[in-house]
Structure formats: C-alpha cells, structure tokens
Image 1 (cartoon, rainbow, N blue to C red):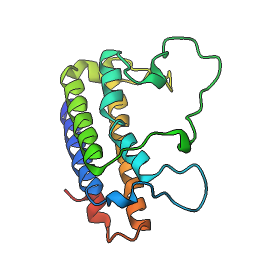
Image 2: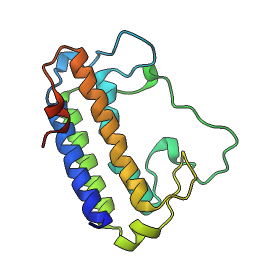
Image 3: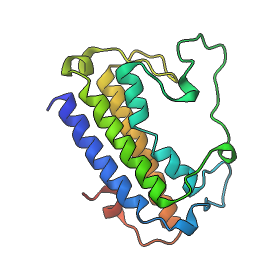
Image 4: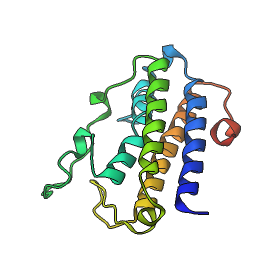
Length: 175
C-alpha cells in the first residue's frame, strides 16, 4: 500500500465515524462539558475544533499556506512557546448542522490537499509543523492530522458516554 491509499482510507474512516458521533449529539447538550477537572471544552467547542482539525492543517502541510491565525507567523523565529488559549476563550458551533457542515468542508479540504501531493512528496518531502520544527516527511505529518481528528473523535465518544448516551465501541470504530 502506498501513502495516498493509506491516507485516503484513514480519512474516509475517520470522517465517517466522526460524522456518526456528531449526529448523536443533542442540540441541548452543546454547552455540556465534564464537571470534574478544569479547562474542558464544551461539546460545541469540541465540535467546532473537530471541524477544523484535519483538512486545514493538511492543506498547510501540502501547500505551505497556513490559513490558521495561530500559525500564520510560523516562519518567524519563535522566542517563546505559545500556549493554546484556555477553553473558555474558544468559540463553539451554534448547531449540529453547523458542526456537520464544518466536518464535511474539512473532509473535502483534506482530500483536496492530499490530491495535490505526489507519492514521492508524501514519502520524502520534509514537513515541519508550526508547533514542531522536526523534519518529518509529509505523509507522516498528514497521518498525524488524521490522528488529531481521531483523538477528538474519541473525546466526543467519551463526552457522549458521560452524558448517558448508549454508545459502545461500534460507534467509535465501526464502519
């Protein structure tokens, strides 16, 4: 299997399962967040983040165009490490429909970014990240972005479980 096949298969599965989980969220639960601990995103904030967690950074790696404000200065020398903002400062989706549209757009963006990459680029092109300058090949960076979506997909799964939804591992891994 080559990089493109692997990444396309992983993208399709991640987005399909993420969409299925988003559809299990009740509109009334968008403001819900775990009560234990601190700095948790609300469900609505998590859904917004999921809708921008894969395709946008894949486009950045593929094209060098980072349409993400937090990464627009990636070529400047960093003198200090930036910390992400606290959860209460993050934006949220206003509806499940908005979350599904963002997820669909991000899926399209991810597949489009991948379509512009050759197998050789995926194998050999160094792709430093704004958050990690280590020279990792482009294919692995793209796979990491799919893993990013998968991590938040799992976070949503546990949010749903904690809200008392009857979810099981099929919802998380089933095709």
